[in-house]
Image 1 (cartoon, helix red, strand yellow):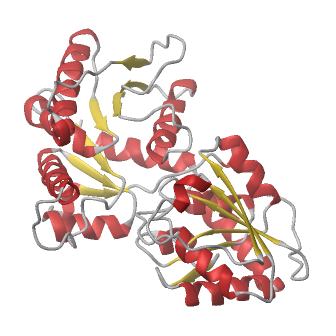
Image 2 (cartoon, helix red, strand yellow):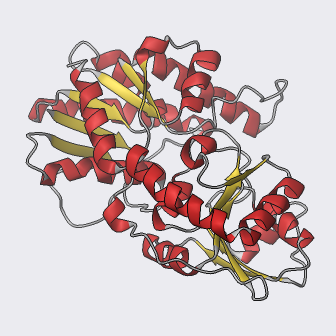
Amino acid sequence: MDILLCSSTFQVETHGPSKFVRLVMELNDMDTGHSVDVLTKDYSGPPNERVHVFRRKYPRGIGVFWEYWDNLIYLQRVNRLMLEHHYDVVVFVDAVLGYLTARRLSSRVPVVGLVNDDEYLRSDFGKATLSREWFIKWKSRWLEKAACHSMRMVFANSRYLEERLVKTYGLNQSKIRLLYKGINLDKWPHRSWKVIDPASSIKVLFVKADFIRGGLFVLMEALNQLSELTFELIVCGATEEDYFKQRSPVVPAGHVQTRFLGSTRQALVQGLLQESDILCIPSLREALGVANMEGLAMGIPVVSSSAGGIPEVVGEAGWLCKAGDPISLAEQLKQCIAQEELRREKIRLGRSRVEGLFNAESMRTQLLDFLRTII
């Protein structure tokens, strides 16, 4: 099978869709008879015969309609590549960018798409306003919905998203396939058992570029409440300036020392997972949560929220609070710190859970099985 992956991100190694593309591209190094090319605007490395790059220039005044322009560019580039290569299927890693390609080329090649997030699926936009933010979300949701209806098949990376696609977009259930994201377990080795000493400073790691959506304010409030303990909070994905320029940021109490590391490379995140005591990303919204998956694989205690698809990842292998509730989060953190034997059991369960449900090999196998049904 010859696959063309269309992705707006490729080089950002901490971005979920980029990780997906890289894992699927590993098929090129396996003796499977499958080949994978990538069409992207996000590549500046050395020449690679498998990576087809285009540079984009937006016409003056295009503003919030940039996705429509990207749709046109992808259509033109896919059409051009198909004159030179035979592809059995075209996969848009972000479905919203494949609407025109699905509409115009579906008679020549199956076009499928992934929905990775609930950013546009959420139906709580409220009443129509004249704000730029409202219009961008409304416009993008319309385009994503149209793309999903035009494509041969749509992949949802959680049951939560699957239900949203049916309820919000009115998609036929038979068109949707559940495809959990996976990770390469060899690159996320299980760490040695680490004792949490309540009498010492407890290292809590937060990893999320969209730190507001990731619940950083909620986490800070929860830690502030636990004044009988001391914490070192390590924040990956935001600088101190990013944090404090937000409206009404939560100021850390004296027993909470905070380090803001900004955007961080994957290797640094892995090192921090090795040395930290707890991974805590109490997201307000999350379609799946790959960072929690990576934490479970490495054997760090995971404390998160019950938002979206997070329970599908964590299950009984971690501690889940009510989304947006710092009191609930503080209680879950206290239980995690105090219950050593339960931590051991959840850590054991976490690695086993990732091996069974979220490994890269299973993800690739499922993807290929699904694609075979439409070519």
